[in-house]
Image 1 (cartoon, rainbow, N blue to C red):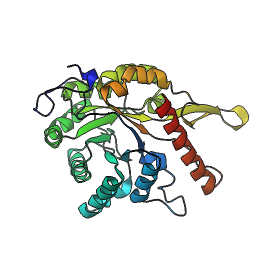
Image 2 (cartoon, helix red, strand yellow):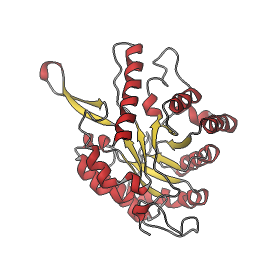
Image 3 (cartoon, rainbow, N blue to C red):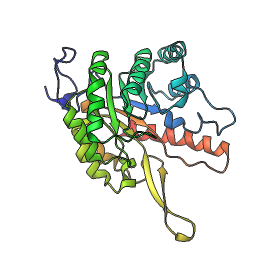
Length: 290
């Protein structure tokens, strides 16, 4: 059976299947912690914790939450993590994870966290301060740890972003050659490296395991000197969602779509939180209707 069906009788037998295939069934719309970026931050007077963000997610009728680049996670004990998992279970929410960096010890740490949280996917990026691996180093790192991820049933999705050319990420994934290593597609990120969103979508399509959904736009700076590149409400910016969905086929391939935002801080805390919630609801309405 082809990878586009998202199902294969060999899944679970240890056999390798084609690029872009997924373990498990179903394609979901989820929220990222980036959809609660300001509400979770110390910039607001009463930041949410993960339990409250999960409750807000459930109240919106969403049953998937990706804890992505959430710094307090690494300091949590196993008991803390189990408590988060219990809250998610009580609300009927599945979890995914996101981090940055590909040092083997760091990936193993997040594999352990994924085990406690029952998260089947870890999104990451190549570069962190002090470690900017080249292609050979990345291949070596993934080759070292992937047998452990395969044994645990956890996939790694490397996000497309401006610090590393998409061609290099794809070269690494092709050289490693494991269905447990693929792409987290986010064409908004690569614009800063002058990579065309459509060209990136076309290139990564066979290897996508996860999708970050956020819209983006350019606006003239005050005085018409230069531009600001920032977020936009989904459906109102430059993201060609119809083209992306047609190429990546998330429903047919059981690829989860995770909502994020690039919302700048507004004039006040109240306005920032109001807009963050409004953008989330608009994103949900857009994806549910498309």
